[in-house]
View 1 (cartoon, rainbow, N blue to C red):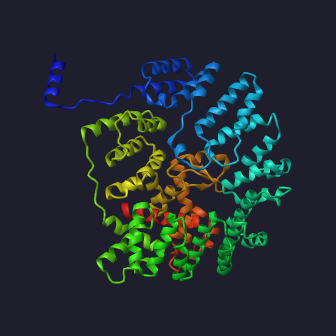
View 2: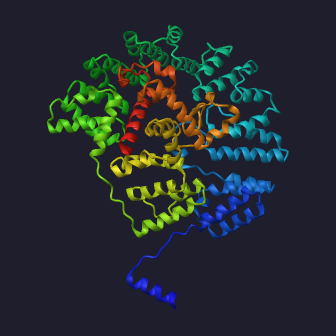
View 3: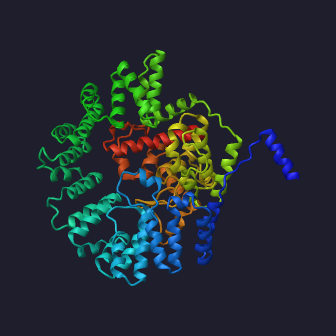
Length: 613
C-alpha cells in the first residue's frame, strides 16, 4: 500500500520517474568477463540470455557483439559457429567511417586473424595462409602490429621471406634486405616511409636493383625522404633532368632549393610546374617565399590567383592583408574565415586585429609583427578575457542520463561506453552543448582519457566559445603524476601537459614513430628490455619530465626551444631561425607541416598557461 501511495503522490505532483535501462550492456559485459577468465560455458550462457532478451541492443544490432560471440565459439572449438558469427561481425567504428587514409579497420583485422587461426586448426592450411597474408601491411599502424607479428611467424613456415620481413620490421635487422626481391623491398620502403623512418626508407630504396626504373611513386618517396633528412644538394642533383611535365619532381626540386634558402631558384622551379593538381600548391609556396622576403604585393598577386582556397591559403592572405594594412580586404576575408575555420590557431590574432580596426584604435596592425610565442600567449589571454561562461544545467533528465552512462563506464570497457553514445537509446542530442558536456564527463569520470581526448575533437568548435568549457579542450589528466614530476624537476606543468597533448593525445599505450607512452619518450632513450614499464603513466611522466628538464635547462628556460627539441630533436631545432629571445617567425619554417605543427604547439602551451595559471 505504501508503494502504491508513493506512486500516486508522484503522479499527482507530476514528478518524472524514468530511467535508462542498461541491463543489456551489463549482461553483455558479464559474457565478456567470463570469456576473459576462460569460463567459456558461462560466457556462452550470458551471450544467449543477452541475444534472447535484448534483440534490439545496439552492441548487437551494430554487429559489434557478434565478433565476441564468434570469439567465444572459437575458444570452445565450435569452429563452424565461430565462422558463421565472424562472417556477420562487420562492425565499423565511427573513426574508420570518417577517415580518408587507407587504414585497415582494427575489428576487421582481428577478425581476419582469428578466421585464419580457425582454418589452420581445422587443417585447411591454404585458406589460413590466405587470411594471414592479408595481415602483412605496406603501411604503418602500431595498433595492428601484435597480429601482424603473429601472422608473420606463421607465414615464415611457408616462405622464408616472411622471416626476413619480420626481422627487418621488428628486429631492426637490415642485413636481411639482401634476401628480398624488389617487390618486397618496395613494400618495406613504403612501410618505413609512413613510419617516418626516413633513413631506412632511403637505405632500402638504394638496395633496389632497378631504382631508376619508371616507378615514379617510389622515386618520389625516395626524394621526399631525402628532403626530410635535409639532403637538399642530393635532391637537386637527382632532379636536374626533371621536365616541365614532371610536376611532382619539379615541386620536390623547388622545395630543396627553398630549404637551402636559394629562393630565386625555388621560385623559378615552382613557376615551371604546369600540372593543375600541383599548381595551386606551388603558387602557395611562391606566395609564402615573397611574404618571407617582405615582398607583400608580389605575395598578394600570386596567392589571390590560387583557385582552391584551403585553410593555409586563406590564412596567408589574411597575413598579407595585415602587412599591406588593407582594411577592406582583411575585414571581408576575416568574416568568412572565422565561419569556415573556427578552430584555426591564428583566429585569436585575427580577431584582435579585427576588433581594433572596428574600434578605430591607432595602428591596429602592430600586433601581427610579434613572433609566434609572444603573440600566441598575448592573443590567448585576451581571447579568454572576451569569453563568457556556459550555463550548465543540472536537470533531472541530465542526472538520469549521467547515471546511465556512468553505470556503463563503470564496466571499465571504453568501447561499450562509445557504443552507448553512438546509439539512439539514451536520448542524447549531440547537437546541444549540454549533452556534449554530459558525454565528456562520462568518459572522464570513467578514466577513459584517451577516448575523451578523441571525443573532444568533435566538440571543439562549440567548447571554444565558453571560458568554463576550455578545460575540456585542454584537459589536465593524470594530475597527481604531473604534479609530482613538476615538483621534482621544477618545470612548468604546462610544458608537461603540452607534450602529452601533442605527442600522445593522453594515450598511455601510445607506440608511434619509435616513441612510447604518454610523453612520447624515444625508444632509443630507454632499455628495450624494460619497454613495457614505460606504458605506466607514473613511470612515463617521471622519465619524460626528466628528459624535459635537461632540455629546459640547456635552453635556459626558453619554452619554445624546449618544446621543439623534445618533440623533433636537436637537428630540426638547429634548422630553424630563432630570434635572440628564443622566439620564432612562423613564416621562416619551410616545411608546411612543421610550420603548422609548431603553431599548434605554441597555442597549446598558451592555452594551458592561460587556463590554469
